[in-house]
Image 1 (cartoon, helix red, strand yellow):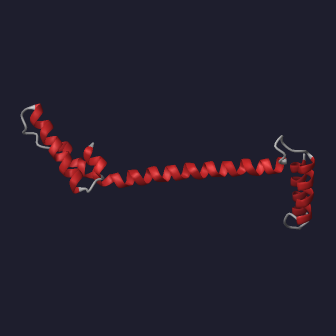
Image 2: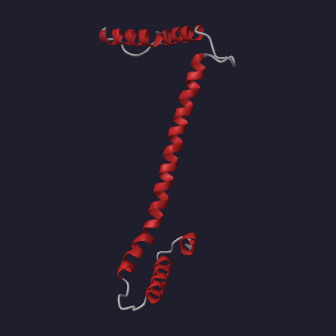
Length: 124
């Protein structure tokens, strides 16, 4: 195949002390790939390969962007979570479940307000 012969050619150049991939060799490789033909829409296999590689790069970029956005949202919600930690040990002297629930609701709301959580967090 063309790529394997280019790899072997490059390895032979390394052994002989020469460096790099020459412009003439690149042009020869492009001509050989274009001679293979093309796809139905008239583009060459080389152009199709470029398109696929671009799509892979764009997909990786999108995944990184979504990951970073998720990490940023989680980081912004940490102050709210830290404020809720003391609530787990809230007043144990409340006698009934309804009083405990009411005290918990007040404590969570005040902790969220103190931590300056986003409005959607306050509504939840």
